[in-house]
Image 1 (cartoon, rainbow, N blue to C red):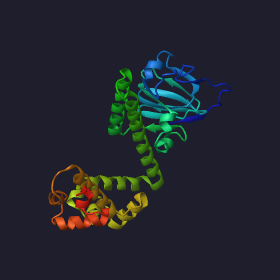
Image 2: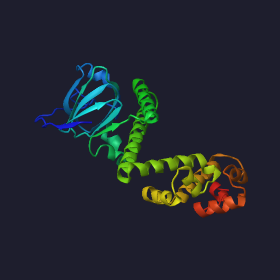
Image 3: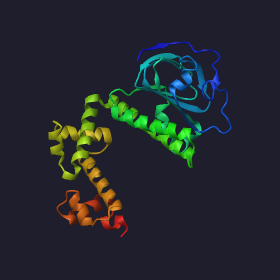
Image 4: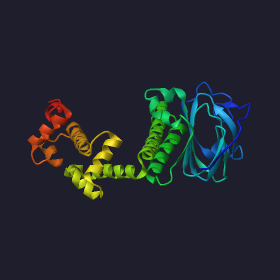
Length: 293
């Protein structure tokens, strides 16, 4: 994504939403609209401006945009997500076929509860490439479509629904951004091996594979796999496998009426007594006590 420097304008207009000098008294804390809804009216050109107290995320799902962001120019093709802090001066020139969504979130929603969770998206403006992420692309679009539907016809719990959906979309972006930062810091090949290991654990945890079996399947040595897990997660490869097994045990003990012995067998244990001892060692409670019985 080429970037070229551009001097800032001396007098930058400040809007609620673009072209609206102030927000209405009954304005919602979360706003969603199609890119083309506002851009087409302005001939696909959105001049430089800021949004007082509003965080904005542009989801470009089709076409191209030439984005002026904080004194630089970005040339972006779909699918790309651009994040904008309230203080960042920005403007857009879209291609005529551009389409997607613009999500605007009030600072009161952003900072409520786990506000620091989303801060990584807005410390500096980001252009997040979604190419090669079809599953994430689909999940985001589903959330954004639900936001549009909810915004078009307010019902009971309307504002809460808008906030939950918006936070869900932002959290998916946080995950992607965190994974890419970790990959950059640790090296792409190491991160890919770690990701493959986690995926393999998800497939095989009920079979209770040993670390050596995972290493063989991944064409790595047990020593390398263990060092990599410690580096990227702070846990050994063995502990990661055991944590996944215990997570499933906790879920089944909580939500299934089956006996403890049945759950033990389902999780690959041949001896329910051993399962109970291991559960207590790792969780601090016996399975029966965990259930509250």
